[in-house]
Picture 1 (cartoon, rainbow, N blue to C red):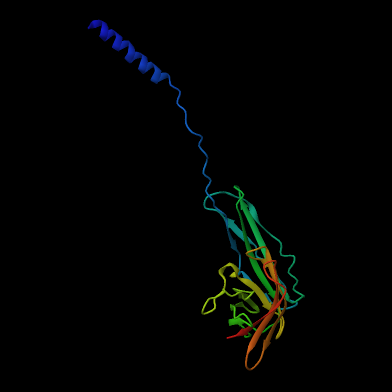
Picture 2 (cartoon, rainbow, N blue to C red; picture 1 turned 180 degrees about the vertical axis):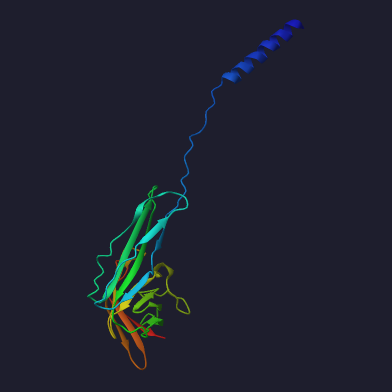
Length: 226
């Protein structure tokens, strides 16, 4: 009996020794990086309208990030704003944090002598396809459209816009008949509107333009106010 107790003691000691000497291994642990892009706050309004021949001084912007440190200030270049030439001039602001996450914001500067009372906003439909388009007045001379291509959703009743093409595009009214939308950020690359005109008649107001973007063809798109 005593001999069996001695053997059991030796076995127990061996098991404890093996467990104590066993190397503890862990699986590889990957660091989880939380996505946090910095926020840009423009100094002054995002949409500015000045008369032809006036002056424009950009007020710049600031940036903050609640999670990561922002490296450097907000970069932008407003030298492209030509106050002597009617048009719409986007000023693009960019900033990155120390993790490389970037934020881009745009200020639009209109150079036009159009009256502040002029207003061509409203709901339009594209001639031929009936595609819907909303036009909103942002400030004097500056408008935005949510469906510049007037793309309809096939088979819908009533006709609605295809969500993949819904993105704000900005344009300026230069005078009673001319519109202009320079290249600006869009869902797929950049977009611009050329050969753009507004025709105001007693019975109807129409807007027309050619969309410049690989996602669209080269056809002239005509929209009728509803």
